[in-house]
Length: 584
Ligand code: PEP
Ligand code: MG
Image (cartoon, rainbow, N blue to C red; front, side, top):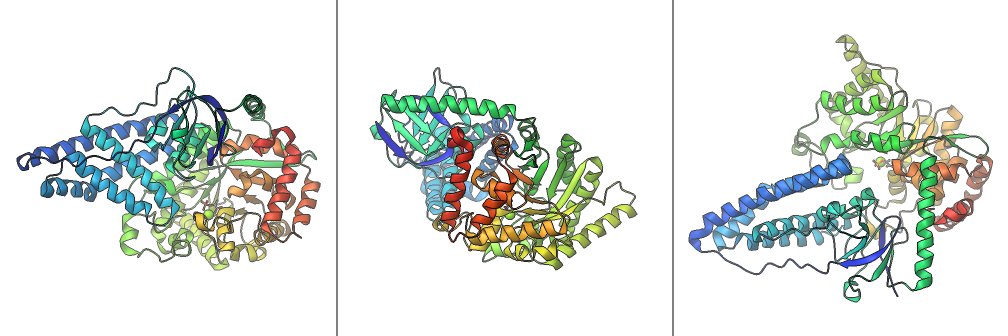
């Protein structure tokens, strides 16, 4: 029996015989064409690019159908990358000037970019190299007339073991028979990991070299919750995991039944559980999991597809779909939280990339500078408010003046709509995200003006601890349980309580079970989370007592390190969850 450790990127347990894909080094040997055949070689390259784009479009269509638009945009981006004129021109140049065969030229150009991405120093960009590798494999295969690796048809249950799976290969996995997968390479934020989570296939990545030690057909356990892979397990281990797998299935079944029931604590306090969404086509996913509204509608997706800025009608149409689907349940639309990297061509031409993007012209700051862009969105929000229960909130609010300015713009927009005789509703709650330490420190002042608070813990933690939320090198400093973070949460919730305004948490902390009791103890009565987390939150909330939670919040206020806070919170939740422990 061999026990291997990696990064669990999709929870659950899979037990099945292994299919080993081995390393598929795509080193294309140096091949050349006759100088007279250069034109036809270039034509061959262009035809292959068209064919690959058609193939990726098919992956996009399949992903959109099975998983939703959020995931299919990965493939939309792949097509755009492959159509990049600079990339194509570089390949053509190698064919034209050095008489490289098209597959050799393609491979050389891709290899160079892959290396650049891998060496850029951030884990995020290194993982984007995998997207380029996906394109390289597809294009070279097309040029060499080879079949794509077909992972979409198996006749029996398997666990797939590979050096790495590209996003395209992952999206293609046969969902009926591929029970889990494990890879030597890969990281937690790769597109492969994201797709594995969406497919709900237990997966472990980043294990390091291990394929040479596994035989095809050997029994393998993939434990995506713990990030462990066990090859050729002994009988007691196998039995233990079989039992866990059965328990998990029962747990999921029980939680599914909670779907339509409200989340109520043992002492009868109602907690509202809403969904965080990024795309209108996530509506069904929300309703299936029993969301009581949308607590955070991120609207940046409108900028994902085109260089063009979305029109008022495009904003309106996207919001309308969500607002109508939720009927009288509240939908909180967050105004654009764009960064300098994710903006339209117009803004990119006018703004220099900020030296420090997290502290630069982004989010509400950008909206307040580009008022036409902000007003377009606000018009759509006020118009759509007529059709349901809409709230608006501003991201990254730092000063009271900024909040007032944003509210003023909203009032101006309402005046314009009235003047033009356009239907709208201006009496919607206007809230703000508390995600900058300055806002938490001044929460008492903000609470007199804002209609509600929604705490964005993802940014609040990064700004409080000066630790980039996506940087692996400082991941040990990015700790939700740090006493400084806990104190800012207490200040914010106390201010909301004092002024009688609702306070929600929409950052990731709301979906981390150990933090739920302490948030409730601070007075939070609304959590907004990825929809799939709602059933387990309901399960946990049903086991809590708000008075005990309040005591817990007081107790941890005395702790001095993030580590002790987190360990204590984990212990508390484990004692509540008993047998359901492993999901906690
Ligand atoms: C947050 O910062 O916690 C948040 C919810 O916003 P985002 O993750 O979109 O920055
Ligand atoms: Mg944020």
